[in-house]
Length: 133
Figure 1 (cartoon, rainbow, N blue to C red):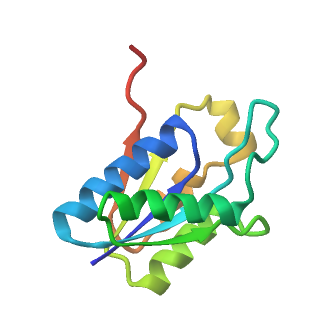
Figure 2: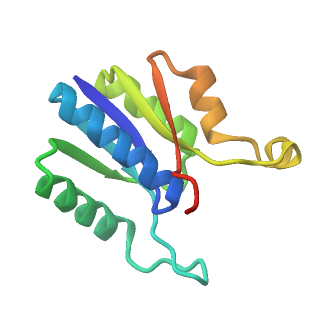
């Protein structure tokens, strides 16, 4: 089994990755991670996309999760990238993170999660970040 997850270092991204790891462990699946950039407080890249992908793969290896990590293609639409990777890998599940957005925000900016939910050929697991404590 193959599982695809889109990951960026945000609370929503961590929730998606945690859910994908749990699914991969329970089904002995290969986790295909599309890894977005880590940015600092000034929104500048802390490390390169390739370094981030390598570090994430090492993290998953340490958790004994079979994985393939792809650095996000900055020229690609994230929804297209997730959907394309799901098709090419033969994924049986896509995992995405959700965040709350205003109706106007959705209208102006669109929604990667919405496109993946509507256009995916396989089931999609949507993970929300844990509530603030």
